[in-house]
Length: 164
Ligand code: FES
Image (cartoon, rainbow, N blue to C red; front, side, top):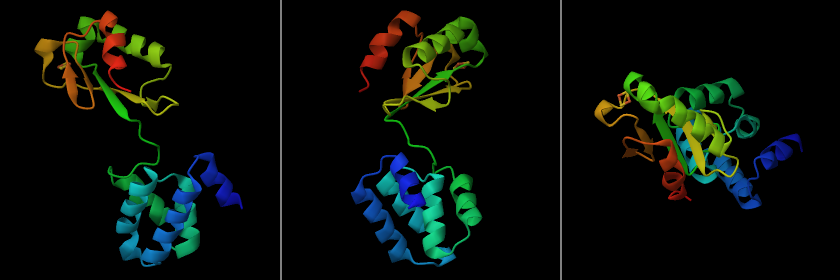
């Protein structure tokens, strides 16, 4: 029961939960199937939290540490839910001196999160970045890879409103 409660903490649907069990059963307990199994699980759940890793370990007998090692080693895998939109704000020197710091503070205030965090509704994740190589456009910000240059604090609301 314990592991079921952990899974439900992340609000997986019972359908996702059944799919998870199905995938684990299908790939079996061979270590060599671990990476393809984890890929499939991430496609279904979106991420692989520790509670899911525990369940895989229980059902397959593969040590939890090995599973954790793979999930944390490959950047493709994530243990946290990914937000729908990723904001990257450059805080390289040029961007920092041209107002990047103020923009960072405003984004954190508007979204009520700190850098590296997701908004609770899963809409945005916000992270600070190093020089994008477009310093002439400082301060620079990117959302889902789309670059915004010469960003002003007063532009932020309109820019963010385009991402639902
Ligand atoms: S410092 Fe921001 S783009 Fe170079």
